[in-house]
Amino acid sequence: MRYHNFAEVPLYKAFEFIEPGPVILLVTSEDGKPNIMTLSWSVLIDFDPIIGCVLSPGDYSYEILRKTKECVLAIPAADIIEKAVQIGNCSGEDTDKFQKFALSPLKASHVKAPLIKECLVNIECIVTDIIDKYGLFVMEGVKAWIDKDKSEKRTFHANGDGTFVIDGEIKNLKHLMTKWQQFT
Ligand SMILES: Cc1cc2nc3c(=O)[nH]c(=O)nc-3n(C[C@H](O)[C@H](O)[C@H](O)COP(=O)(O)O)c2cc1C
Image 1 (cartoon, rainbow, N blue to C red):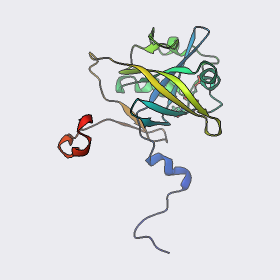
Image 2 (image 1 turned 45 degrees about the vertical axis):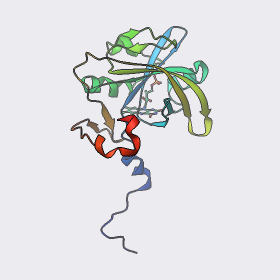
Image 3 (image 1 turned 90 degrees about the vertical axis):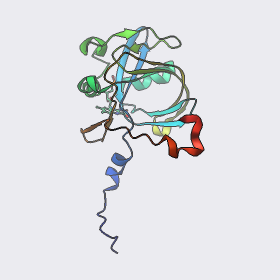
Image 4 (image 1 turned 30 degrees about the horizontal axis):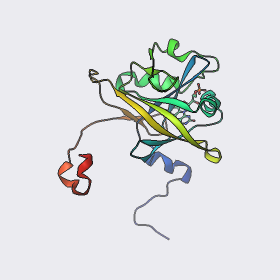
């Protein structure tokens, strides 16, 4: 059977077309020792906000998040894109990532995990559900911060193959959002 001029995409590559949300730095803390991992498998589940994050059991952060049930989702801007990728290529088991990548922890207001000063946005979150089969941690944001003075506001998105898209042109289509005016 022929399908127009479509070539088949291997199924294992299909996620790459859905993945590009912002790359996130997920910060946990255990016994006063903070750690950071890079995460691009996230999904917005509700406006509150409720966010789903998929963590591999191989990540040092996995057990800590299971145990402490709280974290910070820090959204880096393009000025620290290399650091964000490197944070996702080493483990908190043997590395103090705040020190190694010269990042500054700031005390959060609702959770023990710290905010990251160098990030554009920090969202303090409490884990409400864990779906073990998928390593899916469902969490509720309880406090959110934005660095209003930061000049670099572009976030970036993982394609899943080691390449990244940095935000570009913003197109304002508010006039077409007639059903969703409360969000414009
Ligand atoms: C761009 C990028 C995106 C990543 N996304 C995820 C993800 O969504 N879920 C996950 O479990 N690991 C993801 N990782 C891998 C973890 O960040 C990596 O295993 C890290 O070393 C875990 O740190 P930890 O052992 O200190 O917890 C990603 C890595 C990179 C570089």
